[in-house]
Length: 325
Image (cartoon, rainbow, N blue to C red; front, side, top):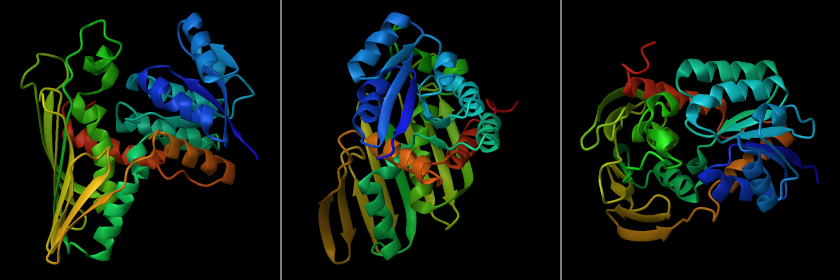
């Protein structure tokens, strides 16, 4: 069986928990190398997850002819530079979300990958949740009638000390924005996947509790191509965690209490029923498997650079002042 040979750039929390294990365990993948600024940590990471090589300089990893594809798992401000460099060395690229700091960077990434004839994907892994597929099928079958309103709440308390490894998420120049940028982007992809293109955006971002460069709370109002409306609320300042989806239609409704668990309650005139559609044990695995198959079969990945760009377009409407450059 032909395998795709991978290099991983960035060894942070998500790389350790999900990305590296998937690259190691998927039968269609060969985990060749990792890069991390500290050579000793890069070497220990490689040994832990079975990669054959380690590099302190990500540019050296990209020059490795034994690597076919690069997974970019670094802070957002590095995504465009590293993706373009990878494409110029002939590497396919699967980039962490959000795709880039702005639409202009997304365009440069897409252009570089196209001109060098390599695939580009973005890590919106919730696209592959069985629950999302189920919601789409229920909507398409007309079980809840015409979609009228969709509500998503995503709350995660986040107030790290300055020496925390994820404190860079509070630096606007490194992260791009607060929770609406960091994990709101995931929900924007989910919304577009479920109800189609977003045609109108109104938003409010605020520092309700914390004095920091990025917002701690935000709400966005959406209008979809099919006329339905949506509300997305995110927060780093609410203590109670939330990860909900509610879709109200003309004939019924869909209720997801925790998106990452996959439980669904469906309400119609005929009554109410509950279903369970949990995600994969490693939620990144279906994403990486699809991208790998896309490269080997020479097709577009299910979550492409164009998907990432479409999300970035919505983010620019949510943060109009920040992206006015």
